[in-house]
Length: 154
Image (cartoon, rainbow, N blue to C red; front, side, top):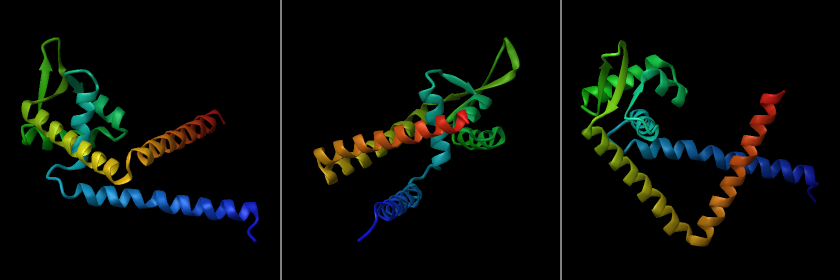
């Protein structure tokens, strides 16, 4: 018979194993799209900010990547006509990034793909299991958020 500590360790290992499966699935799933995930993240970052334009430094801070990486992504998006660089007469040194109409189309397509994927998951699980999954994931998030806060206090 398993002791409670052994059972918890076994269960913890199973949980860890399950969580480790997800990044691989998400990476492989995203390979099917024409647009790179990192570029979509930049577009979403600007869109979700509530502003029409953002500086590279702001995008970098929000996405937690270095500014040169964001600049490279913005260059690619600009080459595709999905963003444009804007300078303001009040401060010609600052460059702002703005989503174009083409960029808006890419965002709409990405949002539709996301909705379709999760709608398929709901169809697969059913409403009851979907609601249970949402509740469980909310609890997982709260647990890790609390843990992160506690670690920052130390």
